[in-house]
Length: 261
Image (tube, rainbow, N blue to C red; front, side, top):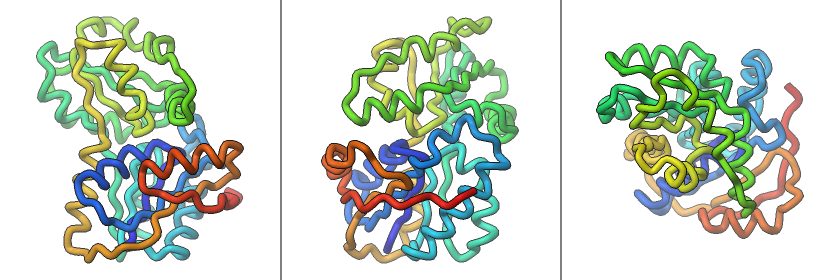
């Protein structure tokens, strides 16, 4: 079995790590669209054909048995179109863990950190309307947190305080006790976020996405294969990245140009 995991950058590696932990042995091809990163500031009409074209080439090349898209922006934009285009291929997307956060909150005030693209979409508001009855949800579409996650992954020191502070200027936000991580990039910033706000309970989507992936693929036979990471633009720090990717069981393959959108 080959599992294709797709993200705009390193964010989906948190999901890969959880899949490895829960069920080692999956043959994983990780596709990172660093050539088009970041997604959070780009309009849907640009992102949709780009994602469909890029994943279409990856599916044709690697013939995956299933595709996991831990990138929330890509999931909300393209998941329906991908399922319609490739009806025989199972797709697993990301759902921000709004429901468990609402169930756990005692103050009935929830925070949600995501990209600007995620925050502005009806998909997120529909989740909030369906699962947070009686709660106030304070959202922040951050243009910088995903970039900070990329920097941290590469070993650079980061400070998330300024990026998150605007969330707590909203009326009532001082009583937030549950925080939804709405972008898998932010998984890599959890230590900094938890240190900054030790009184909050954080709800990270990486583990739920990994669990759902294993539910969807449980009937498939796991066979060993070469686990690779492919980037859609050259990496200036390729040697260092190869070492970091090895920690996720992935070999850095040659970067390939992304298709023109």
